[in-house]
Image 1: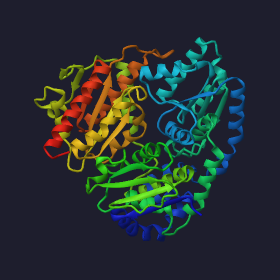
Image 2 (image 1 turned 135 degrees about the horizontal axis):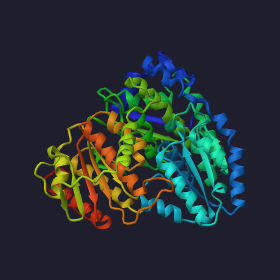
Image 3 (image 1 turned 120 degrees about the horizontal axis):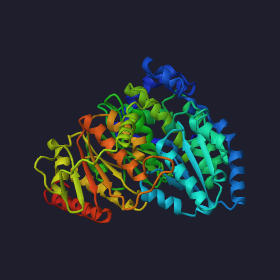
Image 4 (image 1 turned 45 degrees about the vertical axis):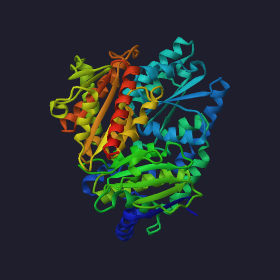
Length: 545
């Protein structure tokens, strides 16, 4: 019996009813599982032909388990009981959800914020092993983190080679350099699996297994759903999910994810990067919006919003309104959402395996690092917050509140607000609490992403998807920078360049961007939250909240 269910109502049920006959007749399910690269059109065929390894990787992944278990045992024998993962996007989000759901500890370092990196370096370095995970082998964030940990291990009198484990694609620069350096272990993954589809490959399994997650059960659950995904049948849960994502008419391109007791911690964040990066291109796509229970988006009734309620496998709940309920084990969900995203790509007429706009922000950041330009002067300063934005956006605004109102005023009736916080996502986590408040103020969906990790996921949708986003970027002053060994730039300079590069690309594409720099982080955060709270109260008084 399948370990996943999908129940639909309203626009979601209509999408399934409308799309399913064609999906079944054209044997989309069995063709995906047979790795038919022609499904997404001739322009996508070349890419698809080398990106479908995820459909049948279970046995290859099982073969990794003895080596992972042995390495975990050996590390424990050496007194190592703390695993840190240096990875971005697809390399970090899957291990994060796997380990959090399993209740085992994994420190995920997917930031270049100096304070967050320094905190990871200072945490139990003597009993730590580091998994450095990069598909390309040249990801600037993970390379920088690896260098910092090598230095920290050496400073602590620990041989860095004995504590660093590499996960990468075979033949990548990292694969070659890691073997030459003699690191503790090097795992290579199937190169025909893209990063965001790699949850059940070495990228998801190695750090999760070393941290103590039950990988055999995870793969068993994925295998249990795999045979059902092959069926060219209206009951195929993967086809049903895909039809909901890409088949509503008109397209409901804001998919709101809310966890209501699924038992899977952080699944929405993983699905967010999978769907946004896969579908957000050519001016179309589907934007996942991860929200809290009772979030404003769930009751907005907006014609471009559809809700996904993630529920317990035992709670076969009937949804209300334009929504679906989804319940199932983690392994089955990981594979089914990957499958559904591929189906949605076909319905949307896009290639779900490329990410043509992700590189733009990286190139802009590299250019800024090379040039080391002076920071552009602020349009104005309000308390601890420096405010930057185009004249067209800010107009006559002279306070933080007025600047925010100018940004909200740029929202179209079918738009969304993306909050991009280039800060310490561990120490400054409470900032994410502004998300539902902003949704209440604007009456529109609001996403919240920590930089630079969102650049490897939703960053693709921001630049390549439906061009209706407005962007609130928040950066903070670095009180104590951190050098990157053998690199001409520091972590502080790197995150500054990443934020500025992303803003530049968005502005060049005509997207409204309001940039707030907290000259004093603690005071700036308090001020920002106070101003947003004030705007929320005023909005409620006016009947808009």
